[in-house]
Length: 420
Image (cartoon, rainbow, N blue to C red; front, side, top):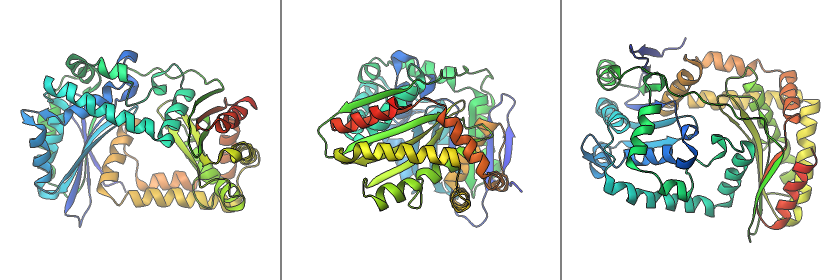
């Protein structure tokens, strides 16, 4: 049984309670179904900057007062901006959960956005951008995002660009929140040990009276075209990503795709790790991942290798990907991948922060909570034919690649794109 309890206010805002007997702590989060995907092109980075500014003052509390209010009680506060979701999260002792929820909600719905902090914080985010651009394994994924969703908001970096960040004004922050933080896109999630009545009262005070209205709808990306995004740099290694588009986070085949990625390169027993690292020594790092949004998705293979090995690595990766998609997994591979997926989900279900995040994600994505048992059943129901079908669908998609580092990596990635 799913022990979670969802309360929906008259305007569509929701709070989900997930009690965990025996705990002394709680995870408290405010989740908004809007992120970088909703930004105008000339304000790329706005959603992420709004998250930063929430920590600079809210309801009259200064940035220092916000930090001290949490840390004086031993709590931990953080926030994250994605393409489709933004969240503010606090982990704290149970007795402090109501006050921490009140603080998180004030940061979301009553930020001060002090003018003197805006330009100062832009400098901080510019440093964050610089740090990301200096990391080739970060940059290569920014480039594959651009290649995967060219001309679409999903193809822009979440941090934004220097010129678009500098253009952001206080009014932009206020307008973005007013437009996108609609009640029906707001989920408050509480997991662990907590006073339910106190949490409900605070949630209703902040969200229950907000006017109900529709947030903007997202435009799906156009089909991808085979493309390479590359930056030649003087580095010791070539950093490469090979990718294809796949199904969305709400597709019935979503678990089949995730299991495909696990078998391809999800761990030390995966095909890519065993063949390219263990058997041939072509790479220290090679793995596959699956990113799924509300209306699209992508499976990517990342590798870091010597320039002299880049061509062979790309050729073998392509062959292994094609073989798995054409022939499907062995019984042992399928069983291992399903066991990994089930164990990872079950382990996450034992942590308050992960449980709160999962509940909020499910409500925003599926409009309901999904029990652990149901999810595990969906994972275990995936067949070899499902995995093969998911792989064959990917083979019909455009080839996408990115490369950062020596020119040999660019050439190898270009060969992957051109061979489709």
